Length: 262
Ligand code: PGA
Image (cartoon, helix red, strand yellow):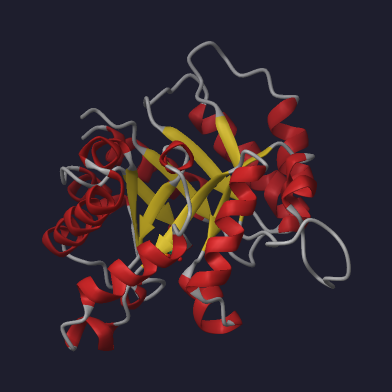
């Protein structure tokens, strides 16, 4: 199965509108004329969505320049109303947002998001035709206790509850071992491949072999220019969700370039 790679920058709480503009100036000039054949996505903080949308939609990309899609880092599970501090999927659509990161481990651990809430957000995102980047992953303690597979299976089945096969085809899974996020410790390519193959087998159990063969599974956790090629060479790894190393235009570009060459 030939799955298109997808490289997504998760900027977390970094880069307001002016830093977003600076990044884009540099990134767009570097990427001009270079189409790596992979999908490229940037997820800035909410307040920078408008800047990203403005710059990307007034850009005259050269014939061979890649499209860059916009992602949000979260969304509300509600449509509108008394939810102070929240942002709805319909609001995101106004900023040309096509993807939304859901279930990131920082949302789970710092903001108490549980599988059932993540599931509601995934369903809401699909209602608005947004593509969820659905994050899952185990902590070091869970891995060391031999619970890796049980944790991933629970996160997947909880997050995808009542998600149709048609909607699944618009979802990207990001496997991000919590112990590798922002730590500089990357899973070895063998550890990552094993986990990805397991995730795909859970999707096969839930949706059948065809859906499992099609779904894209990104790896996330200290991806850098130096390890992107080895990770992307693994048969079940279909791209990367990149935090720290995607804050710098050159480094994000090199990850896409090195990873896409696989
Ligand atoms: P990192 O973050 O690349 O800085 O480890 C990845 C993520 O949290 O998505």
